[in-house]
Every structure is written in structure tokens, then in C-alpha cells.
Image (cartoon, rainbow, N blue to C red):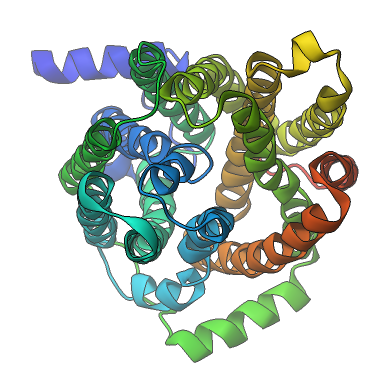
Length: 438
């Protein structure tokens, strides 16, 4: 074995905590032979996309961007639904096409490349955009970025299922999230040095780095050694919809998982509202944004490897525990405006609760990603992932609109209490899911 291969194998075994890199439960022998190097390539690709996601966050960075270019306030409310639903809704229609491809990594490469181009457009708009026209162009670029993200999302999970063995996938996602959080932490620290009104050039640089992250993702995705797979079962969009409806009626465990996942949306939907509470205390200063990014990065740095390891043991319990954590965080956030003035008039209490919810949300994401990949097999994994993501995208749009109306009527604090109730229901639902790791 060449020195490079030995080094890759040792690093793989160190990262996964295993002493035998040849333990492959559900991937072919050819894929097992190159699993260590593919693991590291997945890790580098995921680092690129996670870093890009953080630096173009619809929950933090893009609201600052719209504010800096003078876009209308109502556009801020569209950011998270477009970012999430735009990535999820098309996936059921892509699943059939993906199934017809013996090598699926090129769909992933296409998605990463388009995301890099869209982020480059956002960087230009951050520098040159103005007013309503600039805001509308930002939303248009975000739509393109989100649709491309949907391509990458379904292809990434399918390629991971073909190249990384069960009980290694959660660990992979945990380490990639942790490394990306560390890099993001450094970016937030730099922003904290600029405690004044944000310059458009600084935001343009952040988004330019995000574009480079997605370019890195596409490059490493292209380098993964993927064995050609079966192409039977490919279908057009209408056939995919019919298969999806049949799957939901036949597989009660899959239906139950999607119910739990829908309730767990409460963690994602609560984050921008907590950030909004903090933004009211700091205005649109780069210093306030930097604090939130640093707290978010620290939270991800700590949480992702732990949740990832736990997901490989029981992704069901990870979803349950993360739901409980999200409920507690939403309750804490709802109570912050009633703290004494000296506490509630700074961004720090809101940033700390935001960080705690980021930890819970990391568990939600890693738990449900690992669960859906592990509950499926190579024949139906793409359809499972696509159907689940499409359903979640529809719900994200509906809930985003409903919750936006409720926030207008009830206020942010009462809305957070409603989301806390959803998170508790999610924990109870996840508790009753069957185990899929064993």
C-alpha cells in the first residue's frame, strides 16, 4: 500500500474511532477499498458547502445585506422560506432523473457549480446593489442558489450512501460541520472588529468567500471515486409523485419520520426570530452580526461531532433530544424581553440563546439526515430523500407564511412559545420512531 493510502487510512480510522477501515456493512467491495480516501473527499467537499452556507446565511448575513442596500423590510421575511423551500421542493422531480444515472456525483458537481455562480452574483449585489431593485435581484439570486442546493442535496446523500458505509455517515457529517464551524468562527471574529455600520464591500467579501466554498465543494465532489450503480427504477416527475404517494401509504415508519421531521421545523423557524430580537438591540452593526456568527460557529464547533457520533448509534434518540433542546431554547428566548433593562438592552443574551438553539438545530439536522439515509437502501434511497425533502419544502412555505402572520398579530415572544410546543411534540414523536442503525 502506498504511503499516501496508508496516511489516508490512518486518518480515516482516527476520525471515525475505528481500528479496521475494512468494516463495510452496506456498500460494495469496490467502494470499501477506497472508502478512506472517499471519506476525506466527502469531508473536504462538505467543508466547502457548510462554510458557504454559514457565510451566506438567510438567517444572519442576507438580512444584513438587504439592510445595507436599503431594500424594503418585507423582503427580509422571504429569505428563509426561499432558502429552505427552494432547496427542497424540486427534489422529488430530480429523484427519477438521478436514478437513471449510473454515476450520480456529476449532478452534485452541477449543483455546487451553480451555487458558486449564484453566490458570486450575491457578492456583486452586496457591492453595487441599491434599493428595491437590488433587493429583488438578491431574492432572484437566492432562488437560483436554493434550487441548485436541492440538486446537490439529493445527489450528495445518494453518493454518500454508495461510497460511505452505515455507521460512518453521521460521523462524517459531524466532523465536516465542526471544521466548517471553526472557519466560520474566524470570519465572525474578524467582523467583531468592525463595530460600526456594515460596509457593502465587507459583505461582498463574505459572499465571495461563500462562492469559493461552493467551488471547492464541486471540485472535491468530482474527485470522489464512485462505482456505477443500478439504474432500474428511474422515473419521470409524475411517476416519482405516484411512487412517493404509494410509499407514504405503504411505509408507515417513513410517514411517521416525516411527521417528526415536520414538527422539528420549529428549530429552523425559530432561529431568525431570535436573531431579529438580537438585531433590535444592536441595529445593523457589523459588530452585532459578528457576535452572532461567532456564537453560531462556537455552537456548531462543539455540537456537530457529538451529534454525529450519537447519530451513528441512534439517530432517533438524537432527533428526540434535539427536539427537547429546541423547546427549552424557544421558551428561554420568549422570556428574554422581560429581563431587566441592563440585560435585555444588549445583543449578548439573545446571542447566547441563539447559540444554544444552533446546538439543538445541529442535532435536528444530523439526526434526521442520518435517519433517512440509514432507513433506506440503495434501491430507494434517492426517492426517500427526495420525497421527504419535497414534503418538508411545502410545509416550510406554508408554516413560514402562517407564522409570519402570527408574529405580526401575537408578537415574537408568543410565537416562540408556539414553536416551543411544536418542538416538544417533535420530541414525543421521535421517541416512538423505530431504530434504523441496527
